[in-house]
Every structure is written in structure tokens, then in C-alpha cells.
Image (cartoon, rainbow, N blue to C red; front, side, top):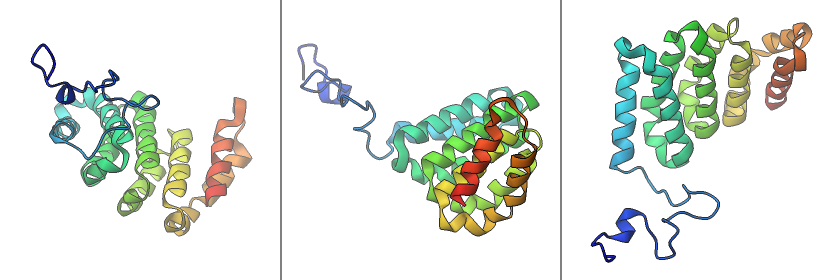
Length: 189
């Protein structure tokens, strides 16, 4: 307890004056999800479930993904709740927001890894639905799934090989970003 009557440990202030943060990663000391994390995930999930506030879905998806990026494996209990909502966010997003919403799922898959395996079928369906309008991020999702799921994804993702090869043949964009992503995805397969 300091001179003001506050408990420094509870307030996040360590004896070294660092605020409880490590030098390189301010989130390194985070442990399992606490009540605040659960409340935040539940509140963001409620926003994503409510179609009347769809204008805020992308912001909620971004915040939800940020929670997973910060907590990593400690956020795994929330995967079954969050991922279907994020998939729904992409499906219901306005055309101009669909890329960003799909990009959030790519980040989510890269962060969470193997625990997305039960959702592979839904994610592959999302790739098919998004291929025409959001090809770069759809390829990014294939790449993320291949990297996250390894052998578990090889057979289901091989069905996408013809689409990826078509990208190699037809891509004439500056910088050939779709081609580069398709090559990385094929390499991971």
C-alpha cells in the first residue's frame, strides 16, 4: 500500500516502477482470462449478434480479434463463441467493409491456430463465398489455415489448389500480391 492508500500491486504498479509490464511486451504478464476479459468478450459478442447495430460490427470484430492477439492461448475458451460471430460479420458486412472483416478472420486464425479446426468447413465455405470479391484476403485465409492446421488441413485445402493455380496464371496486378499469397498458400499445402 502506498502513501495514498492504494494497493500498488492491484493497481498494476510494481515495485520496480514498471507498472507491472516487462520491457519488451507489455502483455507478457497477462495470465488466464479474468472477469474483465469475459465481460469484454461477451459485450463484443452481443454487438456482433445484434443486426440492428451492424454499422459497429467491424469495430467489434477488430476489438475481439485484438483480445485474442493479446491473450493468445489464454483466450482459447472463447474460440467457439467468437469465430462463428466473426464469420457472420464477414457474411453480413457491407461490400466496402468485407475485405477488412475477412482480414480480421485471417488474423484470428493466425493467432489461435489449431483450435479453429472444428470450424474448417465453415471457413472453407467462407473462402468460396469471398473468392470473387475479396480474393487477396480469401487467399490469405487459405494461407493462414494451411499454416495453422498443418496436416489437418492438407486434404480439405487441396481442393482449392486449382483456384490458387488460376491466380498464378491470371494475376496481372501491380506487385502481384495475389500471386505471392497463392504461392505461400501452395507451399504450406
